[in-house]
Length: 350
Image (cartoon, rainbow, N blue to C red):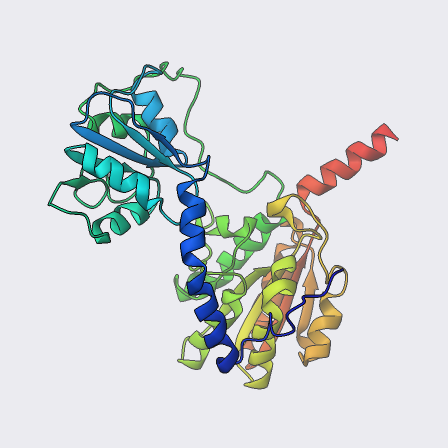
């Protein structure tokens, strides 16, 4: 590994950061020149109809092509794929055409910048901000066609056999039994007491479970439960996956222990990082040791196997830990059904 020649490269003390920022500003003209000469910013200027000039970015260019069914687009088009915005080509397009249409996915990033550039005159610039394209949501060829006053792009009809299938937990997923048993205990408190995290188990928000009430960012389940408990909510329950706990939940648990928060934290231990493909994670096989080392009392680290036959035991554990005024950790441990299938398949092949 080659060390940086500038020993201050990664030191952002205020005095150094101010100099770095000035240096960064001095490079902007070079970045602009690079963008204006980039082969990735393609300006098709030879089109004869100059009533309209079109600026597109990324996938939006494909929608534009589809709106014309692969035929030649009659207007000049600037396809932007490198930044900062190539001002030379934009000004040329603006001066050539009567008005502009900006087609871009997501936020109107380019459109807002265009309206901030010092163009002469008051030529219209259309896009998401003035209603030519929807302000929110994804674009598609039909929406682009409508903005260009073209007929809809009609694809092949969807066969009747294709039906909408909302996302759902896998059949046999251990999280299902964890949520269904938790629902029995939480029924008397109503909804709004279970804070969750990002993972397969976020689907616990959907029917038939309707078990969880939040999903903000990795680790937020524990800190939100703590904040709710500190504000007087009872019970305050956090649900977090095993790999997410190791990635972003440990510090939240430490805060709970330090402040003696009245929370019950359920760690869904399916022995993998299921949502992203079944990778290993750093705390595999060590969850009890981690919780014990942070300061959770041993008698309030509970483990069960989430299966329907174990519901009485699971419900009893939930009730006992909710009755405890302090930090408790409940570990629901059963392997992900998908990784288990893969293991069984590999064993058969061997």
